[in-house]
Length: 147
Image 1: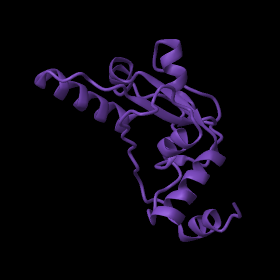
Image 2: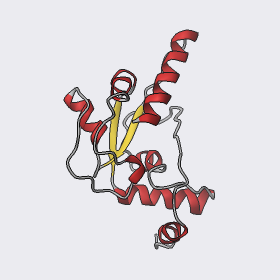
Image 3: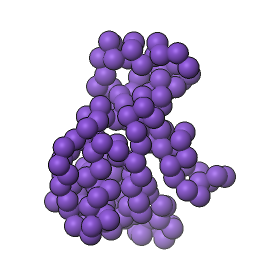
């Protein structure tokens, strides 16, 4: 929740200072580690039992107590993607755009590719691609899958 809470807070505060309309901010988590997704639905920072995902950078077993209030205030929703969807997004980034991004960092593209976010057609969309924490073996395995 640290990256999204920081980005969402900065963007909204900038918009408030400059009189701009703040954008809709949507987070993405893996289906196997939905801690912030659960927290937003329960109305408090929550923990999950058992993390089951290869998206290690998005897999804390709890929503951070410092991050959650910012996410609650500035993030409109959190959607979930499967490991397979994130792997496909990682493969597309490398094979078609020559970008090396770990599966966690490709989760936002997976959400777009697999239509997880409503009402974005024809709108400007920013997708944060982050993290190069991927081994050559993992990248090779992802990029050599037949599609």
